[in-house]
Length: 352
Image (cartoon, rainbow, N blue to C red; front, side, top):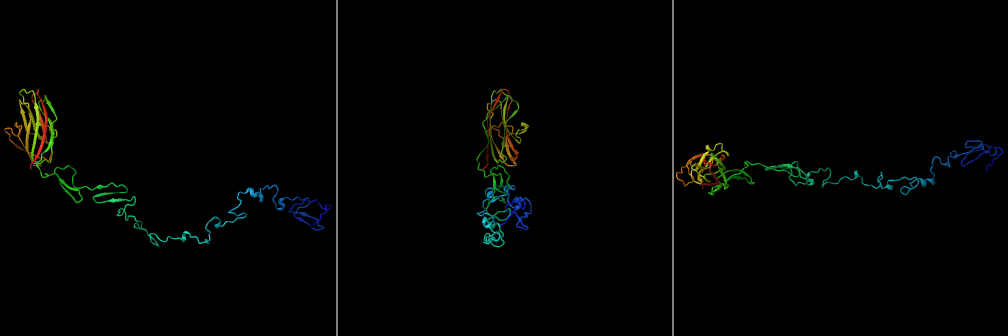
């Protein structure tokens, strides 16, 4: 116990943690924390938190309410977490967990070691541009041979041409290969059966009046592949109001669809009657087909049918392979007369 004599020393106020120095002499205090005289110590003098806490130090009581983290993984105080606390692999791997470096591929498609995969290993077509397997995706397909084409997905194919010229063939002679393609075609006789073929038939009414010159009624094309045989021609026409001036009907042949001058086209038959109401023509013209063909004509004689007297035939050379036309005309010299054409018919009878 220290005894302080108040009468012999100045008044000293002490607080907790103060350092009191005694230099001897009856237990008297000479200084407190290096201070003499009336000494007043604060929290800093004794390294304590001040009551006012100007620096906002957190004491144990304040920490519980001011700090939101109460514990870490159930630990309090100074907490040090390990890999096991957070479910991670430890650096030292004491449990021998398998890492990527420690788990290599054991085999690929039954192969081991350094494995090289080919198209056949995975069931894909082999090669480039040419596929012999099943098309398993959007791969390029190339077609060759009689059918060509290339592409992915839908392919536009092209069928190879043959030497046959696209056209319509009459009594065609054809050659077919083992694939069913027509490789040659030409016009032929086809073994004529003698069955007649109608080239033209019309019963339309055509009226011609008050025209003094020869007028074209119609030009009928003749097939260029016509064969030898007979051309039967029927031209039905009639006139009215005769006064002695002739009217006529004619059949001519030429190479122009519209003849430039009717008078110069080859005349096949004529019926010029001065006083008859009917000016019909009904004739059979023998023909020879082909490029060196012929037709037998009557010329200028009024032979209106095969049974008419004076039927004299004269041959005219014709190349039937060049388009020919039969012209049907009328001439009305009697200007008061009206000519009515009521029918024109052409039939081919091939020779047997």
